[in-house]
Amino acid sequence: MNYQYWHPKMETLPRPELEAWQLARLKDMITYALRTPFYKERLTRVGIRGAEDIKSLDDIKRIPFTTKHDLREAFPYGMLSVPLEDVIRLHASSGTTGTPTTIYFNRQDIGRWSGFVARCIYGTGCNRTDVFQNMISYGLFTGGLGFHAGGEEIGMLVIPSGSGNTTRQFKLMQDFGTTVVHATPSFLLHVESRMKEEGVSRDSISLKRAFAGAEPYSEDTRRRIEELLHIDVYNSYGLSEMSGPGVAFECQAKNGLHLWEDGYIAEIVDPETLEPVPEGEIGELVLTILCREATPILRYRTRDLSGFYPDPCPCGRTHRRLRRITGRTDDMLIINGVNLFPSQIEEVIMGIREVGNNYLIVVEKDGSLDRLTVKTEVGPDIFMDDARPLNALREKIRKTLQALITINPRVELHESGSLPVSEGKAKRVQDNRSKDV
Ligand code: AMP
Ligand code: ZN
Image (cartoon, rainbow, N blue to C red; front, side):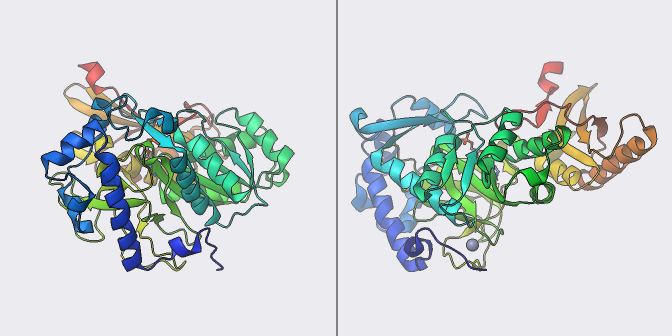
């Protein structure tokens, strides 16, 4: 394969030079951080009074972790490190797990950020001849404007279609010959189901690729989208605290997400002990941003679970590859004492061909016990008025799930298009247990 680089020098920088770069940028970040009320207190407490107190990359371990709670405490301006007149934009997290947090950008920060996103997009084989439809919400959420700027930097024609309004999305694809889209994986599946329902033929659109991210999804879901839409799907990882998209992305080898180590320092720690896990093992991803002056966030506990692949990538990039993020430390469900991540359920049901494109996990109290119900839509080949295949499918899903998760779930089958679809990140879990007591 002919791999293409947007920034050949930085993407293939030998490790020793990459680490020297990281150290220099980390020192800069310390200088900026010490200008914020929050970090001034935090860093001086551990004896870091200036950039000169950081002598090697290993010194990062002296810096206390930053959590979402800290960001909320510092709201609105406690982590701002430049005068307000130098700030040109703010973004906020979508508040998946509570009230939003805010980050600020100066002009250079915006420029660097688009550079990283451009690098991600270009690395999947796109170029300025592509027509890019950005089917994700614009606004405080970083995915809209972040991808938009990256696409423009490459010189693609960017269509800021935003999320939702599925019928209009096909129309735009047909009218302008869209070749690449960005969306959540759940929205891509929804688009595919709706295309079938509305009789839109695959031949009427020119789609080749999709960037899918903002929420966890399994390899089976990727394969399903690729097969149904006949496109290549690339995993995109980011979070608003680290400026949003552009943190880690798959290259054409599609095996792990290159984390841009000239922009971010990554650590993988045990979420309990907060000590580093052995190389290659899974733990909580901790990130330090190196490419944003206006809000320098150091050692941020993302809560996302991942690890690094130990071997180099065939594409020749020197930046390490993250494993697909399977979930967050805070989305683990405990059902009758058994620990379970929603991604384990997704992996099973998306691997079953007769299952449709949408599902929902419901947990309730049943007396003193917990009850797990998995609701899935059925695929287009299954008819809701024919009981035999429905019963067989229900049993197949139940048995496969039980074998893997050791919990016996209730399985409900629903007609295609009948389960709720969210315009942003999919809400896959309804935990009603606290409401029941
Ligand atoms: P936000 O700050 O609203 O952009 O949300 C960021 C969070 O979305 C991350 O911390 C992850 O939990 C999740 N996320 C984003 N991209 C991915 C991805 N490709 N795979 C799994 N989870 C993701
Ligand atoms: Zn690669």
